[in-house]
Amino acid sequence: MIADSAVELYAARLLVYSCAWKMENKVGGDLRMEVSMVKLFATEMVGRVVDRAIQVHGGMGVTKELPLERWYRESRIKRIGEGTSEIHRQVISRGILRGFYPYNPFEKVG
Ligand SMILES: Cc1cc2nc3c(=O)[nH]c(=O)nc-3n(C[C@H](O)[C@H](O)[C@H](O)COP(=O)(O)OP(=O)(O)OC[C@H]3O[C@@H](n4cnc5c(N)ncnc54)[C@H](O)[C@@H]3O)c2cc1C
Image (cartoon, rainbow, N blue to C red; front, side, top):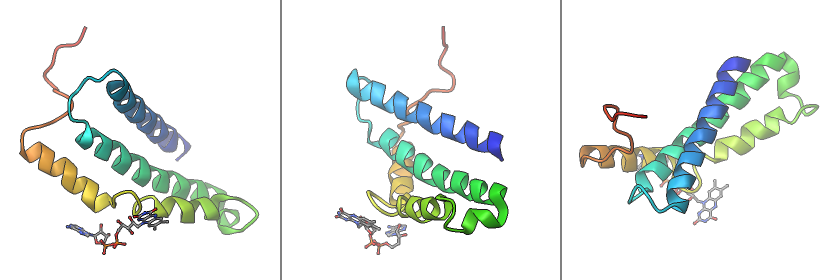
């Protein structure tokens, strides 16, 4: 569980950096779809990570002795504010159906 959370946190960080880099360097054109991907992934990921952290701590995880139960409540809100997960999924799927995708899997690298 610790490894799964570490991988997901790392993935979210890279998504944020990639999108921020494109914005700062004004590459990639319309980034709305990528912003939606970042927001959707990061807010759903943090819920999974906090959930695992509670599980790892057993009963202690849901007591007020640890901040985890508060993080659980606070992170849950993130899937609603600033565009719900469903609306971001709509933005992403609409973009894909219109032929946009931020990454070409067949593109040669290096
Ligand atoms: C802590 C917090 C802070 C907030 N701060 C602000 C703020 O500062 N400024 C502000 O303007 N608003 C703020 N909001 C409001 C927030 O933006 C709305 O709650 C959010 O947009 C969802 O709208 P709603 O609550 O009316 O739900 P609804 O629009 O009624 O949606 C209910 C559910 O249906 C889903 N849904 C709706 N339409 C579709 C669709 N077409 N397809 C699939 N599913 C759909 C939604 O994803 C959601 O799960 C805040 C909310 C919270 C919880």
